[in-house]
Length: 91
Image 1 (spheres, rainbow, N blue to C red):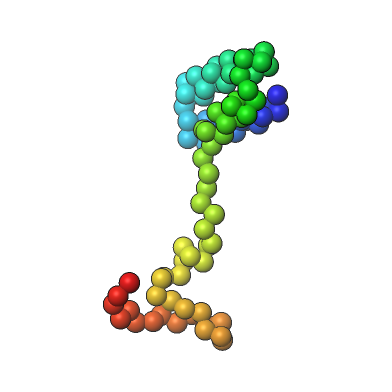
Image 2 (image 1 turned 120 degrees about the horizontal axis):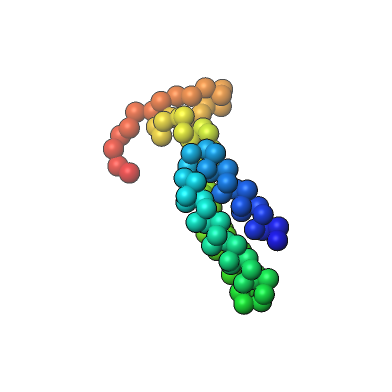
């Protein structure tokens, strides 16, 4: 199954990046193989199997890089210059 292969590669890369131990990966791998076999035998729906695989994903924040660099009290003028405005209180 392509979904299993993709998840296997993703989790295996976590061990190389030291975000997961080899023992944790092996435990996940055995569980994933059992669930894959259940899915192929018709005991588990493919959508349930895929949802289980997706549950372990780590999603990165997709915030704009500018929001991480520019302070909240900064505005961009029409001249493309950043100006820090004085905070007057409130929200």
